Length: 463
Image (spheres, rainbow, N blue to C red):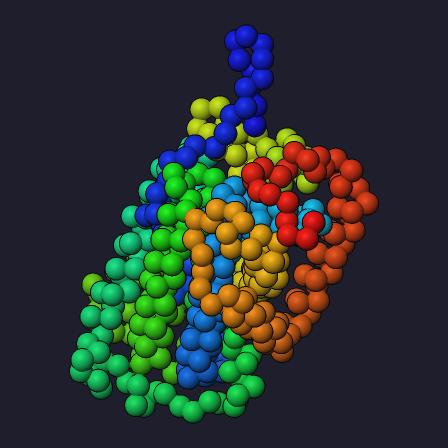
């Protein structure tokens, strides 16, 4: 965070403002697109093919609300940490501490899931070529280590690489769509034979909401770039909303292809649905393209997760919510290098569990807690600083409808998660309660409240 100059004085080293809308898009879509390659299909296991589609559209509405709310608040509170920075300015320290943990845990768990996908895919391909028993764990370590090094070296290079590999991964889905000839139903795609009614009724649709989040989980990560974009008022809304449109398109074509190639019973349990879809076409070119697309989507996601988790951890250190040691900025690369390195073994440890659905669930639950905060935060933001009282980079329409809709959708998804993973839900809630107690009784005394409010705003209405 600071470095000694030759004159013996301390000079503050800040993060570089080098990013534009395309980098924000690459960060948001790069984190999420792996959800189109894996994870979403567990919603098919819960509610069948049609249940998964309903969950896709229902949760798509949830994330559209998230994108709209985030675009307004983040373009106004342009600081590293995203929702954490919003919470400390609008609500208070205890909420900010919890939101920071939500972000770090959600992204670190997602990073572990991405590394697991890389390892599982390599093991699957090795088995198909006669080399059974390949251990996926070295690939988990290698993936996390290489991407941590990339993040260590600079955010501009990191997100430029993310843009390229995310675009390739998205293009791979388009190539598969063309390859399965949707204009000629029955030749390759067998929707009429494979699609069935809701196997578990509407309760199955509700249960599918949990993994329906995997289509979009992480788009809110665009907020973590707020302190490093050249123009937050332009780049954050444009990059976030265009990213959400990209993901909605990718989610629909992914569902359409997968359910036309695989029975829902198999689709709901495979770890690599889109690669399996390519294998079922028996087209070598499509298999290679989807292998590359799956690898690149997982790498892009893990890369973005390292960026986002480290920014949240760095911001908490800078405000003394965590030891200030984590707030160091590299004097040459201008990255939060200690936060990046500290979270590497955490991601690897969870990746070594091999429990993909459990790791995904912990990531989903952490994200869901953050979205619940967003709805309450947005209403508090508009109440304390009404339109016209401060300059906003973007104003989302129809307030408070998006915030209220988000709150209702979050409540429904909590119930859906409880149906399948009640123990996980209770465990993560207990973790955050214990962490809150620790912060209140031990860490709060180190916080310098006057130093953490960096926005030049007037006093809130009614203060």
